[in-house]
Length: 166
Image (tube, rainbow, N blue to C red):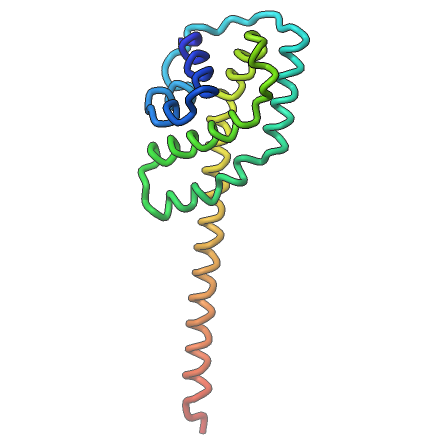
């Protein structure tokens, strides 16, 4: 499964649209199913460097913040949670792949390691974006409720002030 995962990730560089349209590819990148390939190997200096650089780019990109409005929109459209998560992960994958350094393409070990990181991070970013999107919705609802309460209070005060006070 791990080798298949890396093969699917590698396809991102040549056919992003094809990858993102396939539900199996998205779910495999998100870690669904059993991953039989979990071996740890010693990484070379270029691989570690590429991974650290990618982590830095991911951290500074704030992808979850940029996807939060999409999450809120999907919730407002009443999209099923599984479908919404899949769509968010697709967007996260697109953005994560764009952060890859093209110089690592010639280094298979660095490429595999970075693609593994992209697969791991896509799920984490999607969950974080969902949390932020839901927080935005809660804030919006609280604001609406407070505005409604304020309007009711003003309406009551207007009726009270307009009544006879003899």
